[in-house]
Length: 163
Image 1 (cartoon, rainbow, N blue to C red):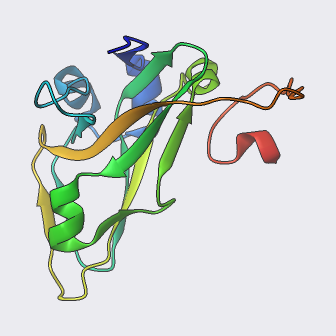
Image 2: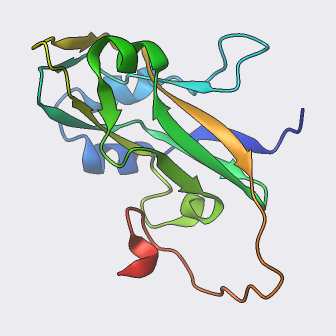
């Protein structure tokens, strides 16, 4: 296995900019870094920083408090946990989150946000307890074309390089 990345927390200041509730300090202190559940797992589980109740047809944007530093040639894909997708049709609003290496240095410190929708057709409510896994990240190596000349600089996420 190649060891190509490290997860870190964003700063308390950055977290409080997006999570403005009164309990932000205690929530920040309890944030768990993503981890694999087993030696054979490809995915790193992202843990809910706070309790989440998501009724059918509703959406929530979750500030994870996490950033990731990666070596060149790698990116992190974010997916919902398989069981939540299977039981509740829980989906990422952008289908798959792609975290690029240079997102780490953005003004928001590379803060990974995960936006989920409960697309349950049976009216099921999803309840995710703080500290429970709700998404997973998988590192993937990639290549570029021989004539690639990209020289743009990222500052942000969600389409920041094509605004």
